[in-house]
Image 1 (cartoon, rainbow, N blue to C red):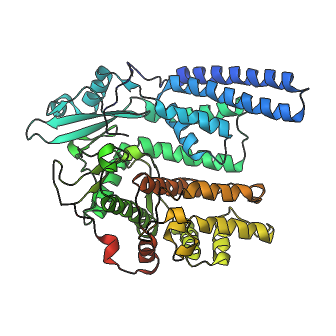
Image 2: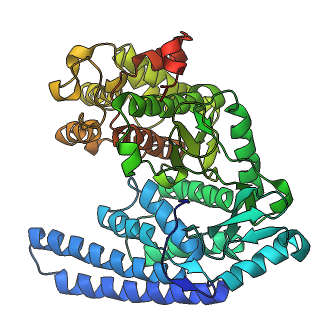
Image 3: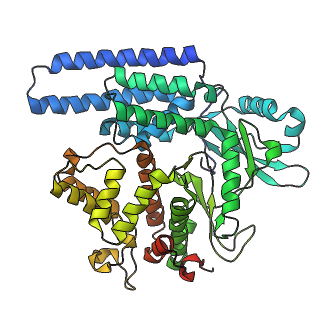
Length: 477
């Protein structure tokens, strides 16, 4: 949840009553189903090309209509839609994910009187009186909003993340209703893969509304990163936290794409990019716990020399640990195998890892397997030892990789699109969908910083245990 002040509309309550929400969703679904039936009847006699064109237009229209309906309900329904947009690329038509992405623009907050009632119920009037809370939220999202506060006794600045009343209890019924709505509107085909993915979304939603779990996870990450001064994790204040409120220290910083961050010298921006990449490697290779939400609102940049503690270099502030997922070695080992094999240019081991992860099959033609393996290997371009394969525009005068200018994600996508692998590609396991999104988020984070550095030394550190001081030092201001 972003920590910048957001002007916007406010409402007095969130519809979380099961009957009320189900009635709204059912009405929307039935209306959408009627629209589909009408479309099919009028489209029956069109030629194939026109049928396809009209079908895609219908999907887009259906999706926009349903998104408008979801947006009016707020709460967990909106969050479910956002999660589906972010992670549903393998299960939903493009028209649906594009429409669902517009839910991310929702800025409606809950009126202060309703938030104050939650705080009094959760913390008690006496405990709440110890704080001076700003009634204007600095961030509003689908499940809750954030308010700044000051502890009267010592002036400590903190933030209160307050969950909207009733959203935790509505997760299961809302998810079932949204899935049914998509089915009625004929926007998705149910099957084992979709059902598995839906259950992963369900688990993710339950983690998102479990504020006690998020508080514990925040403290765990703070402890794990305590010895690395490049990162700041807020300290949770248990005395002002509850099942529906998380209180933590206020940690100032700039958004990743802000002007002050863009104006930092290249060396300092590259140091921040290295830190972000190494954090991902630590999550993947060491901890097995990964923050899977790539939203840039979960990160801030504290610039050296500004207010507060100043160690002499820029630091990354990590916010919001509600989307952290723990992965078993049974899943992560094949992922690590594919990364190592890609670095070592071992195509057979890459294919073997893909088969173990169940999104490649030895039944495929050999050329398709090799093509798919090469596509996977190309993702590691910034971490490669062979720099001769880098495009000229992706290398600066010092031989360092230019993450933004490389346009790697688009090139990989074009490479995959030109091949025949889409006809064979299987829906990946649900865990991989979330991990893949995280990887894209890390690449994008580094690219937005316009960092320029070679990732190979960092990767070797985690593949082979090589210790290089260049990867652990921060750039001094």
